Length: 416
Ligand SMILES: CC(C)(COP(=O)(O)OP(=O)(O)OC[C@H]1O[C@@H](n2cnc3c(N)ncnc32)[C@H](O)[C@@H]1OP(=O)(O)O)[C@@H](O)C(=O)NCCC(=O)NCCS
Image (cartoon, rainbow, N blue to C red):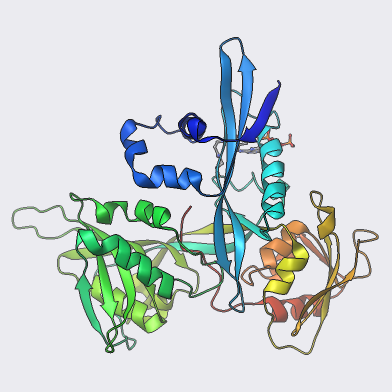
């Protein structure tokens, strides 16, 4: 098969989007889909590479991979440019012929050239992205909170108000920019992405709302976006459900004040939330922690370092007397091969290339292992016992975990 990979032009967006939709088992887009302002804005954001095959019936888009321009928070507080890899798909008629490999390698190279030291994505299947250097760096829980749950912990003082439709987008945008960076892995959000995630709360006909928390000194310091469902029946006023779409606070106690509100809404029997951090402040804040039922634990942030040196220097490390040396191999970027020494003061490259897989370093890993451990959520211990990392001794693994660990645990909380 011969095909061309090129940057998608504006005139091609809809054709390419429909290729994506087909690959992801969805119906073709409608005119109404394209009339939404967020649709065009999302295609304008970042990089879009599409693959085109020629045949007797002309040219056909057979695959796509894109990357949004995003900024991610790292341990220590730095925000770094990140390629938010998205819209990955190849037509079922053209799969397993190397189209994704071609697209992804070029996408990662161009993202690096554009000054993005890291790339992250959400994976439809866990077996797809390891071959491109990605590893799970952040996980989440989907939870149910049963009837009768209440918060026992102190919650922030303040007042609550529910936003009207016309003020929702701007207010949420402003509050998220203020409070949406509570842990490594969180992202800056664009207006178009927020418009998409608030679709229900902006729609005139949905039981979806945004409640805002305001501190005693008048600052809007948190919000929760939630959807309600109540199968009203004569004389059987039970079965109300609340689905929490998005919740952020300037501190855990502000977030708990919002949870307090959600758990006390009348007629609601159960509350469901997705993408909760593994170390969710809500769990032990409940009077009875067993009301917090984990329905499933999922990988969230798949991360790949594109520029190891820049990335290791961009984050901070925990106070520790120990140092650790890490040998890295990377089949895609030779510039990422070498040995880095990490201490509490930071990271520096101490050798250009790894002489052999194990080298003289304490730890040896492919780019996958380093990418997984990078945000401090996936431990070097886990990666070593799983065979992703090779350790010369146990003390080195303990030292690496001491240096890299990050609390609270990384979580993104924004789907893209
Ligand atoms: C996943 C997808 C993009 C792969 O595209 P593709 O062009 O078939 O991938 P490639 O031919 O480049 O495959 C590269 C390698 O990955 C493997 N691979 C790719 N997708 C895989 C999958 N879903 N399951 C298992 N292995 C897979 C291939 O077997 C191949 O292995 P090899 O190098 O040992 O031969 C494509 O199958 C697809 O569009 N799937 C549905 C949509 C989807 O899930 N998109 C991802 C959204 S996050």
